[in-house]
Image (cartoon, rainbow over all chains, first blue to last red; front, side, top):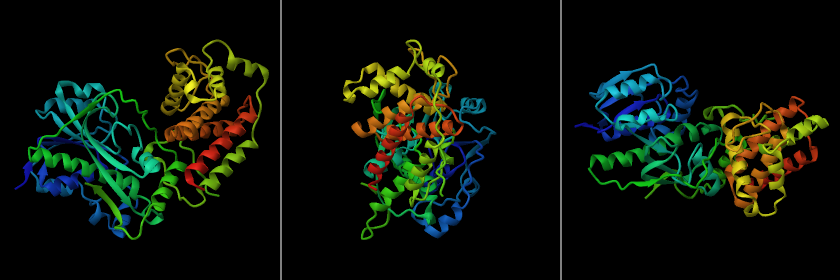
Length: 255
Length: 177
């Protein structure tokens, strides 16, 4: 029997949200309420086709699974808004109207301080090991630096990538990137590693297991900035150079 | 020729993943094309860049002369990374800033400021293995190239050529090419 999560979900359409939805379906759980936003960039040209050709749906998550597939199966309140940014006033207004205080964040901007009023907490998964890799395109930087890949689940605070880290998931990468799977890194791998970390948190919550948080603030590590295309191509090169054909191909959680 | 498009003003999701083949060769070729369009500043323009204690260029140049990164004054280090952040957030740098890093003029088309910042960021890559700094340096140099394409004059051509060579060295080192 499906279980109700002690979380609401702020749905910002996109691959991350879909990856998270796949996890909710896998765990057979539903959020207390879903607040829907809008995103004109949510659809990725060619991804569905690439997913079929490369087996993403089997190995990672169903890239086409969305709310239209999920909602008929779960008794969940849904509030639709026209908000395109998490800081749009309508979002704060709708949040204040809910009794739910804990929210799964799926994107839509950098949260401003007013959203943290009234005890609101937002569960976010960052694609990098905190506090070492704060900022943008972090997993590209960690792969380039030492072929490490991690995702950190934490509750957001008003400061960027600061807060209480709930857990960090580490991954091993053994894949080849080419023109045939050029959408994989940004639109499958990034959301997938976040969803795995989210899943680990939700499993603990559902099993009432304690989660030891690690607080940090004013981290000494400089935030990373959006990676330049030339360096991104080097990351791809780095991934490919580290590929070992004799080992299982894919991205795996390091236990 | 594959055109490696600049990252200036682009949203994260708009930045494409490029083919790795020939990427560096094409990138360097594009940088080289810019050298042919260089134009030097007149004396009045040069003087304006260095005027009063809020000018950033003298601070950056002084930092460039320090042999060890650890010996660079803390205030200068703070300025370097403050300018980096300013550039990342706003895509432009002024020639003069207040002590709290507020731009004091609209003189944002001064390539030498960007060149010197890129030079210092590249040093942090080489000496401190700071890939983030390298990333910022490349993005700053993208901006320089755009300015030169628009015939914006620069003060010191040799300095630019040297910094571009350092950028090339950094990318080669990182790529094992």
